[in-house]
Image (cartoon, rainbow, N blue to C red; front, side, top):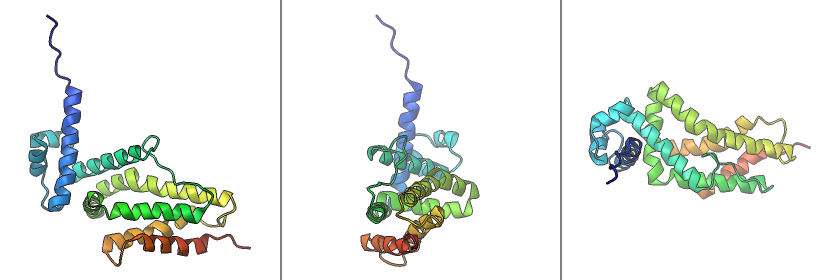
Length: 207
């Protein structure tokens, strides 16, 4: 009889990681970040807490990796190459920006993303290392995507070439995230459209 195969340690580890990620995201959404503990994540995932501490130093680190994994899977489902999406370029800058900002509004309003993002934003403000990882892994790539779309519009004569693409990007996404974070008003498609309209007034090529 053939020798039975030894258990695949890498597959077992991947299953454990996936269970830990799912547990972390679920608990933060259900009970909030403050009440989420490493012990609770371990129990929900069906692993020992030492398994978690072997891979991560804190619950914040677990949540960050879980969120980055969630974002990467969402990008893959959207057809991104290498986990990286690009803004559409139909030749109509206003329409393209409205489409993407509306999608961003929908994501921020989605409970699956809302609670983890708020928790990471709060922790990142007091934990510089965590904040730097979150910015470098998730926020910065998104800002660069907007910047490249604006540069393409400048090259096509649809945006003022004197405008700094980074500043233009922050004019678009900064107010949106401010309203989401501080709940200063409705976060809906109408607000996204208004941001695009106002930002494009500054981007319009000068005669």
